[in-house]
Length: 165
Image 1 (cartoon, one colour):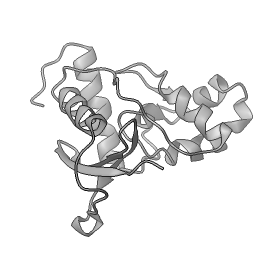
Image 2 (cartoon, rainbow, N blue to C red):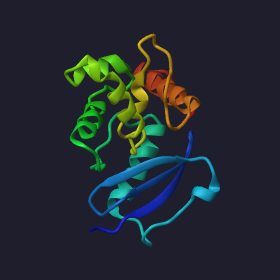
Image 3 (cartoon, one colour):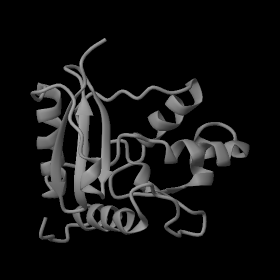
């Protein structure tokens, strides 16, 4: 098993914990409590360095998609949901019902929503782009204020509005 490396990046939406191996990113999570700061193996892999650079570009408005390899452990259904999230275009949103339909069965809406909430690679696997059927901001592990910030940021970039970050 490959060693897991961690680093932290102070982003416009708070401290991000970035974890991964020499070959993929397995975690990008929000750290709201400094007591949550932990470290894996010493050193930073090239993939983690690349991820940090891509996140910086994203927050500066210079990147709309990510090139880094990602991997999360999950069931076949979870992997399918997370894979579908990668198909949501920058600056766009879909509803949980739309997500379930993209998975081939509107009846899996609750399971799809639950899996969306278990995504462990925030921003890069854009679970923040899934909203309620009535266009409301619902359910985001990082907090609804972050979801709103990320969606506003992407909308501004997608529509040519200048931002400070």
